[in-house]
Amino acid sequence: MAAARSASALQPERHFWLFGLLAALCCLLSACETVPKSSVARGADSARLSADRDQLAAQLRALGPATDAGEARRIAAVTVQTGQDLALKYGVGRSPNFHNALVNFGFRQRGLCWHWAVDLAKELVPLQPRAFDFHWAVANEDRLTEHNVIVVTARGAAMEYGLVLDLWRAAGFLTSFPVKADPKYRWFERSPPDQAPRLSRE
Image 1 (cartoon, rainbow, N blue to C red):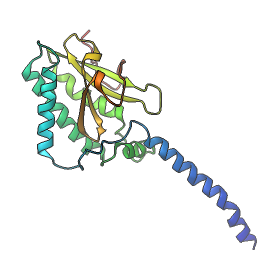
Image 2 (image 1 turned 45 degrees about the horizontal axis):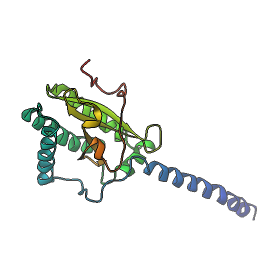
Image 3 (image 1 turned 30 degrees about the vertical axis):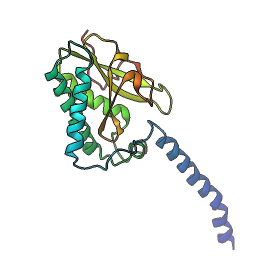
Image 4 (image 1 turned 90 degrees about the vertical axis):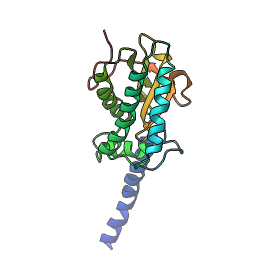
């Protein structure tokens, strides 16, 4: 009977621990919003990737009269391919929120939104485009839902006139919006973290 009473006494503690774990998981899953319902399952989707490249190249060309079509195509190709490469490297499934939890609990090493932005910057900066600039942008700064992306603008233009390049939001597929038209986030330019390459030309 003593053993039975001892086991029973441990039940509330065990339930409290499980409740705390679930609560923490829910909080972690809330960070950086959720994957759009239109996102397809991970895997080869050449039609979608081709469409994403073409759309981004057109968006980049529309940033200003002095933009360069060749540079726009190269930036678009690198951005779209980097999203696919990083998704495989990070081991991301359909849900970036669930992957956030895996990273924060130590089951994955990378895949938070700022990891995507840093690793994309490492691929874009070496292109050294003459007609475009890259910027680091943050939304919901210092909050649980903080989000980080790379923004590309026409050369010399302010960040708010650029395009958001978000690879996190759709688990490796590109999400691109004009900064002022993003339906989910209000973006502010900030200095990139130490892990990112230098974005400024100065």
